[in-house]
Image 1 (cartoon, helix red, strand yellow):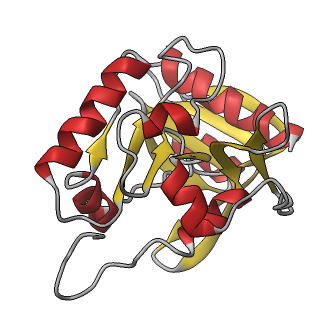
Image 2 (cartoon, helix red, strand yellow):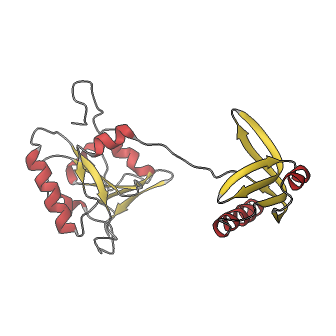
Image 3 (cartoon, one colour):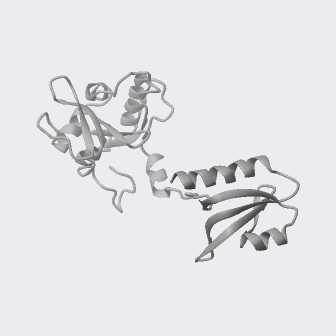
Length: 226
């Protein structure tokens, strides 16, 4: 992995510093890229003005681009940038119909937002959403179920953290999931707890499955979770 990182660093540096003028040849590499659906191997790569011009045999590329500046790849591996270009369209749709806490600056502001959503959606059996960040709120800790109860206590509420690695539950949601003081932490997850060992209201990583499995799923009748 260190060899790969070195080769990629060399390429990124060269691309960022060489914008105009003669092309640059990176040779002495084990390069791989895709041509259509076929894997293409090369020992040299030529770029100019921030764009790849050619790949192939390094010696042939030297003859083809005699004025090229040469970078020794030191027999490292060279790969194209791995770009994850995709969108969660269905998830975006759900997010736009649920409680959104992305821009909240404090716990109190989040509680107000949750209350407003609950008043506007009296028929929803579960209140869902997320985007909270206790660091932005300057809490110095995770939020508590009692603090969520203060906003809404008559229906279960499940709110994911901004990184989707934790969920904040009120008492109704904890009860619906059957999470108690005696519930053990699942492998790969953690139930945040009070000093007496009772759940404090936040589930981390794999522990989120304890409540997610009881949250009603979307139906054809209602395109958002009830």
